[in-house]
Image (tube, rainbow, N blue to C red; front, side, top):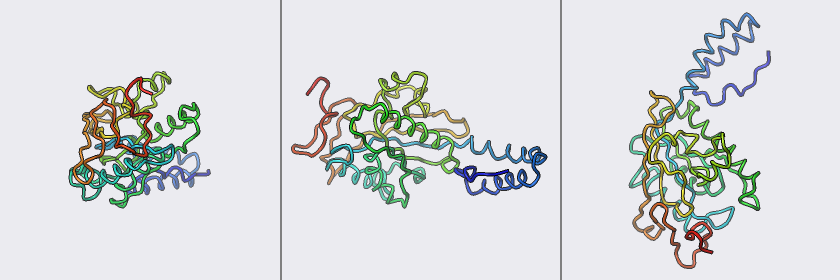
Length: 274
């Protein structure tokens, strides 16, 4: 009987010996070994399925220059976030309860924003990056983002490495929460709002506004109660010197960029503006 190494992926160090015992038992005893190994499998599988993080912190990438990189404002936001909220010695740390166990990203913009903070913790970024394509609304591109968001959410809720831990997800805003996107895929969960169960909590916005780069969504879970989130709150990013000029518009309000900035303005304009 052939075994693939895929079975070890995502298991904590203490669970790997259990899997190895299961593999050797079945391989060495053939069909008869299945009955004996069933007990080992029963001990192994619940520990993986029950993995639930304590907290997930969600934020959007910084302001964009183009489809590949952040603009100067977005780069400064990445530095400010590492210094004030997300880095090892952050002044207003979001990790007073425990240090982060992982930073996840999905696009080049989110990877660029997450990297300074993750680096201060000695962590790499678990990168689900999708390369930009010529048309942002290309159905193929959106489908890839859907699939990678689904895969990342499954990992956050199932991976034993993050059981009881804190995970940071730096994401693309349509796939955090977007009522229009969700309506385009009826019967399929495609946003973090759906995939992490935030739609079961009160006061969770249905859509992340296009002009907001300056908020955190903080989601708490109780591992003893399963996968359902138990608490949600929004925290606005507020920076002092030397980052006091970073845009800090209220939720749903248009962003005002510094004069002469190299940032894209398409998503920051008020509704109906050119």
